[in-house]
Image (spheres, helix red, strand yellow):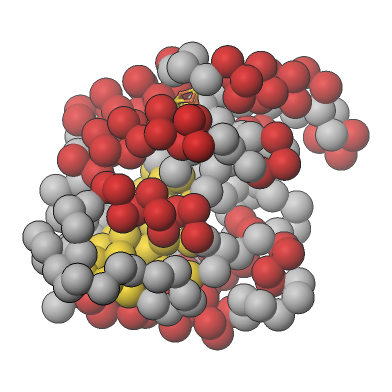
Length: 228
Ligand code: SF4
């Protein structure tokens, strides 16, 4: 990993700026879910990972309490069939991930052309970070984005990620205010683009709100824009 991304990741892992979130992550890591009682939870802020030459930044909401907060890697280690596997299955089908699952930080999964990140790096209670926590964490994303010189497209998973992506880029090139909708996209004044998708949470995937086909279409749209 280039040193700029190394420095960003180190700053994220060491961050203590949100007392509520730090306390929650630590408590979850100490109390654990029964199925993971033998695991040592990461319980720290979670940095991004993937291809340093990525043209697509894939932006999620935040680490899951017993997923990335346990494994130390975003979209890694959720329950089988959860958001980790659902996302990796779609990335693999689109030729952007080496495996159709994501189970542990040392599972050998590699990404091609994609860097996975999150709006907030500490698992929040009820998956709901407060606005002040989102704002505080934005500095990490800004530094990470700046350390990915090839990145042209943000694939935002969910409304909150979409709103954070808008704060990362200059205003849209058109006067129309960008609205979150699945497969919606807008181009910022500097030419970089945000593509939106519903988040692959189980609430969305188990209700059919987001299918594999829908997520793959959004990923392919992001890849097409990134390579244009
Ligand atoms: S959410 Fe972000 S800003 Fe807040 S403590 Fe975690 S890493 Fe730091």
